[in-house]
Image (cartoon, rainbow over all chains, first blue to last red; front, top):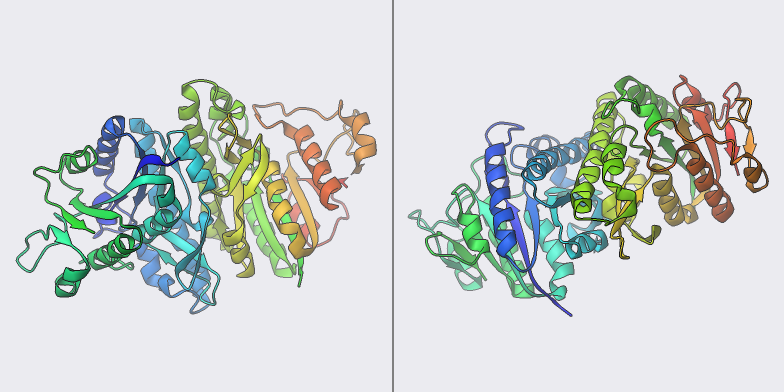
Length: 269
Length: 269
């Protein structure tokens, strides 16, 4: 029997941290988003998984050691330890805030459950996470390092790639799966700075030059990366992604509870 | 082809924390043990895995919520989140110290990679951990909560049980596997307080009344639990466990590098 609905919520690194200041979280924003999830979870008949980005945490050592390239010199190993450590550090902060407000959250470590092969998900272990969903928990994951069985040794998995890996394993258990990205903009902008309401394979070629790269350090590629990962999930599993502004109060609550009115949104399907 | 040797080192919760003071780590001891591992690792031709206990961290909420009994009331869910959180907290401290001294350490989350069935390991995912060993890393794990596929929902896995679950998956890849427990005593004492040098199935009945329970809060059973888990591993996989005093300088270094002279030790096989 299939479960009702699975909702994967990505809390962008540019939302939960100040990307211009190394290792600087935004506890107020994390708390507000956590409360919006908690309030909407009460009205939502389904499971929720939260995946958060790294912002000014793991991107800093990842950029220094070029960790996304895998093993390139002797320092790469030290780099991996530091990136993995920074990745857990922001997760600790997010979990601390979530537990204080009473969210039924439990942390899962992407580096422990995903192995990639040339950066593609090769083996993904979701049994404990699935059991936690059955018990009504909200699993919390994060952009992380992932070991790769090829020569490069390891690579970086953005929150978007973590979501892709989870969807691949979980979508068959649900009648419906949706993805919501909380970004620091009102969705994806066109050249005039207006939100593009619908993005699909047909329009992506036209707009890929317009989608701006993130203006701070972001080793995983910013908005264009989000759109590409979303299109892949849309093509493979017919899953729609919504990109909303997570810095605006109640946007997330409204989308989860089905009230899209007044929320600028880019829908990717 | 089998690898040379795998050494699993358990750093006892009573060694790395002050069990009598809630949430109190011993950074000096953690650093000294980390350096002994680092120094011996240079002379050791094999892989090392470190598993540490919880001491005055996760045992506190675990005892409050009776988490080892699984779901017994509505508070059990909150308890699980708190125990899981405290378990990661002491791991963060251990990792912080290890990375500062330059240990090539990487953390793996037991709750993410183990599912139990009536408390026995049911499914254990070791691919990322195995890949990290191939790359020369020292994986660091810890006593943790584990989701259980039966009605109880979840249970607690001591460091000893984590080691048992890892050994089950890993022993076939190695020519030799050894386990070292760093405890806060000179091995297991007899009724006169003298270290019992050799423990096996024949002598266990005689001494099980003598093996003292831990004198602080320990939801996982203290020394008797260690001996029982060791005997199980000895019986199933012919693996010897050594219990040494981790509070005495150089005991760990001496054992890893094969110099047992002068180290009071209980060997369990």
